[in-house]
Length: 80
Image 1 (spheres, rainbow, N blue to C red):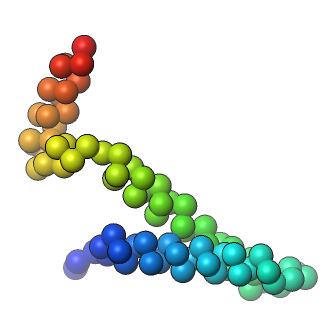
Image 2 (spheres, rainbow, N blue to C red; image 1 turned 135 degrees about the horizontal axis):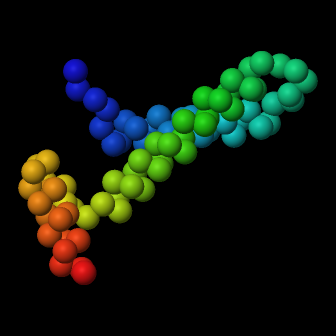
């Protein structure tokens, strides 16, 4: 099974954020629909945090598991 790519995740986050903002326009009057729209909109933050963490991870460390681990240790020792 192939996962979602970054474009698909960003589109999901944009749709969820839009639904959350639309929910703010609806009267709350003890209706469950705006509440569930807010809950659905809350998935935007973790998706964006994922992209922030991926963007902050140096490209040279995106190697295979063993090569990346070796590079991380080398960088840590190099900075000491």
